[in-house]
Amino acid sequence: MHLSLIIPSHFAGQRLDIVLTQLIPQYSRTRFKTWLASGHITLNQSPAKAKDKVLGGETILLHTPHLEKEKWVPQALPVQLIYEDEALLIINKPAGIVTHPAPGHHDGTLVNALMHHCPGLQHLPRAGLIHRLDKDTSGLLVVAKTLETHFTLIKDLQARRIKREYEAIVKGVLISGGRIETQLGRSPHDRTRIAVRRGGKQAITHYRVIQRFSAHTHLALQLETGRTHQIRVHMAHLRHPIVGDPIYGHHTVSSKLNTPLYTALSEFKRQALHAKNLGLTHPLSQHYCEWTAPLPDDMQHLLEILKDEKSK
Image (cartoon, rainbow, N blue to C red; front, side, top):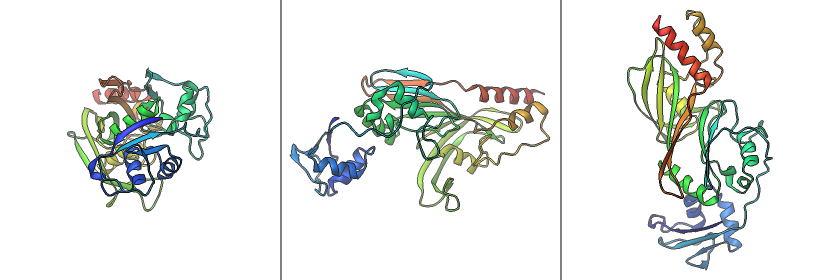
């Protein structure tokens, strides 16, 4: 990898290794210390140390060897490819697929499939993934194919320049759209859950009503930030949890509903959330590009049942 960066003035007085982790967040501070010690990073064309204090305005030259391969195995699994060029991939992830290997999910993930489709991804952090989707959320993901693209898109994501729009079916009837801003962090009672809490990270979601039904609402949502479980927690916070959400949705179905709707809701075993639209400035052409993935069959079917129920 070869990158050249100019240190912004607001980093003046900070250690070089700390500045590097903020400018290039996909790598750890330990990795930057290793690269500095081995001479792969220079400051104004001179050797530099991790503890060096920066002034702002210096030029960082990063020339590193190939990254160590992640211990993830390529697997010949199907990939729903929306778009591909020399810089990036746009993927439509089905519900039920884990994005990347984790405890309990060592293979069969999207990353395993991507590494088979594009072997060069094993040299990139997180196999090129710029963001993630929960296992049971479907929809669009962007994957970088080069380290330079990965760096650019990560910075765009942090600067909120990547557009991510979702659709969801929620419980209850919302009168209008709105904006939700809270602080989110790990629940002190259950570390697998995210909760609205003081001292957490800022989280902002915009939403609008697409269609109202008798006891449900079809929403469009746009992320301004991208925290773990953000949309799911925000809708539960509004007391309109996403249909089928096993963590935040209190998955109970009223027996008073008509049979087709009762059956459809009872059999909907994942959160009704889909990442439908993705927009970004292409790192090579600098043109704005946008992609769309239609709602999956399970959400389409549920919407048809809700429309039929409302018309009766």
